[in-house]
Amino acid sequence: MKEQVEKALEKIRPALQADGGDVELVDVTENGVVQVRLRGACAGCPMATLTLKNGIERRLREEIPEIKSVEAV
Image 1 (cartoon, rainbow, N blue to C red):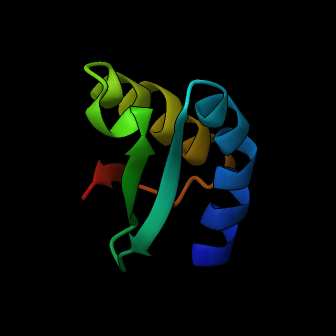
Image 2: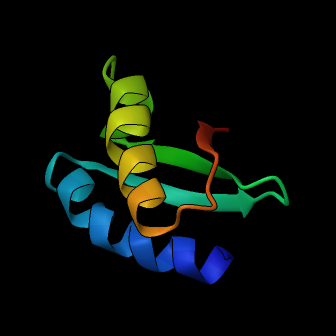
Image 3: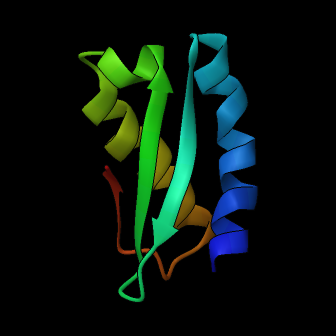
């Protein structure tokens, strides 16, 4: 599943990078929780939680239904 998540994140990255940010995959747990690290402008952005849940998590769950949630670490 980790490879699937990485491929899906590659599709999301350009939008984050356009705003000076990025996302790094840290781990995918056995329970289907994706752990990511927001980088660049995303790391300190007040909208980071919104980006994480409504952007990254939504897109990953559309492509990989087994994913339960996405968390920033």
